[in-house]
Image (cartoon, rainbow, N blue to C red; front, side):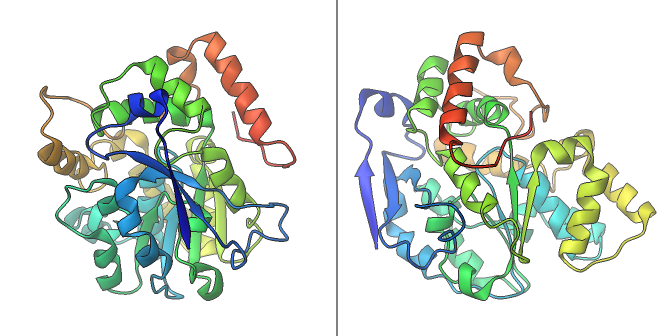
Length: 329
């Protein structure tokens, strides 16, 4: 069902971390059941994951999906947590009390988290299987590796895209502090261009869902839209799930979802996730890193050289060849 290509180059080894273990490309061998066919895409995206994923791949592929599920799917560092909190509250009649009392990690479960961190005692795939319905589920997996029933049962799926230049900037800090990457920034950035970084490549991941943007069970949004005009995104998302809220209610939700509020919201800022990973990996030095770090558009200009940005622009353009999709600057 799947094939695995170990990443053994010196560059791949340089960016691998003990928290995750050795990296492999994971490919679905038979694409015939995927909806991407006939939508302008010849082959669905693969993903770079860790070897431990092999133990979960078929379980995830065969996971039972329900029509009342709500899935939040993104590449990493593309507004995932933001989208999870937004969709959970919209889908639960703006129940702020429960949202404060129950951590987002338990309200919207990161399905493949235990595949990513082999030392994690909890099986997050089992947690998804045991959730009370309607389930909210988060994943960074590409279309081809997600449960096959998604394409026949057709639950609600929200996909959030983000410009790769800002995603990479955010992911670098995430990878250093959450995965405890100790290598050079240069190696990390080079691995991005060579598609040898975990959970990537990003662009093909995004294009698969862009091809499905007109499907009634899929909402395709942009991180940059959320930053610049959250009010319109909230209206769009409410309509998508069949909910109706007043302008005052949506304005209050917009304030709740603002970066300054979210970064200090212990129930939704993934500080618990940081604690879990730090407990497992026991970093030598303490860190004041926050999962929600800056949340800015264009921050890559402060952290990437003009030469690398030019190379990255060429990489993005090359990978968008033949598509009408463009990332928002």
